[in-house]
Length: 105
Image (cartoon, rainbow, N blue to C red):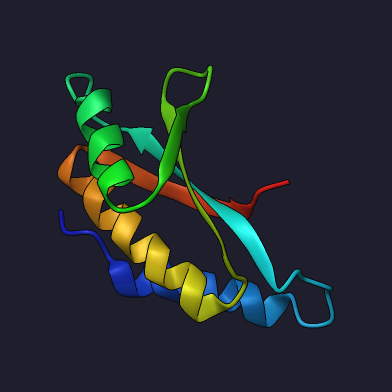
């Protein structure tokens, strides 16, 4: 099944529309979460590929999730989507799937 990037993009832009009135920083590190789909997927290959795109990576203790961080970047729907698209494209090639994003603390 093909990934629906347009639906993913809509979710990101909807998040910003729904956050009207909430004070957001102008710049922040953004974390994109990806979960492993295939048990034989290569964590090191995914981490290498994401780092080549400028992301930092870390594995969560749940054993199923990788977090790719970038930034600080502008906290706008356009900028967050730009990096979401890049990281998702890389992750899908390595049998990992997107599970959302958030601003790092």
